[in-house]
Amino acid sequence: MKLHSIRDDFRKRVCEQIDLQQEGENRFRILTPFRFEDGDHFAVVLKREQGRWILTDEANTLMHLSYWIDDKDIDTGNRREIIEGSLAGFSVENREGELVIPIADDKFGDALFDFVQALAKVSDVSFLSRERVRSTFLEDFRTFLKKHVPENRLAFDWTDEVRDPKRNYPVDCRINGMARPLFVYALPNEGKVKDATINLLSFEQWKLQFRSMAIFEEQESIPSRVLARFTDVCEKTFSNLEGENKDRIVVYLRRILAPDTAFDL
Image 1 (cartoon, one colour):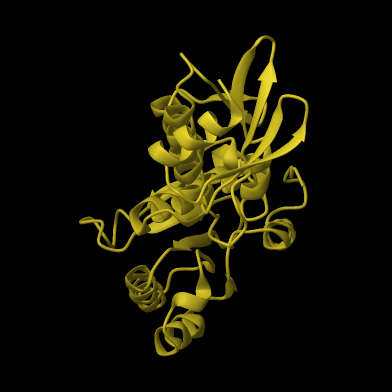
Image 2: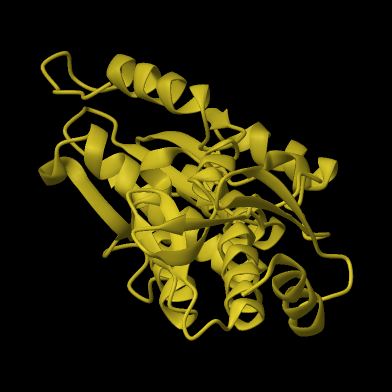
């Protein structure tokens, strides 16, 4: 199939804003208008490999995603399921980070259409719908605590059986083993912050002996008045569960928990 025919097939099947730039023998950069959320273009290369034509991102997409999400988070939980499902739906192979689709029966345009669709869905992992983000955040919260605190000291979704038999005032995680247990809240939205404020005030009225800590999904998204009321009753807060904050949370937990607690920094 000639180069101009391939270009015409790409444009007919995908869009008119497609062009090819030769970079070597049997290797072409495909220029498309499709971009990541930050404005960078998708990387797509058409090349000959082992007697067949393929499209490849040359490991650019997942690497780009890692700028916004930790590599280990991409490989676990909801994000991994979403990525794998997106690739499988368009018959795209993940070769240790390189995304590849073969050209079947000289259908270059069909292959590019599917490949771009798959890259777009994978890139969506960095800005999932609100429900999926919330689900991922809560899962990340639990995974983080299980990694850094012995499991026998964790009680997720804890409630006071005596004072709260109807379970109206739950704690996302109660860390045991100290004179005063640590009540930890995961806060993905304004409503959860308000609920946690009421819970902590109730615990004070019950004269429970405890310490409190909270991790926001995105503290900047919480209205200032709601945030002010919460920080009045919560002993320690962290603005998110990303990057260097993870290390800060571990340092704080090490200081609060017994000295013989094992940590994995």
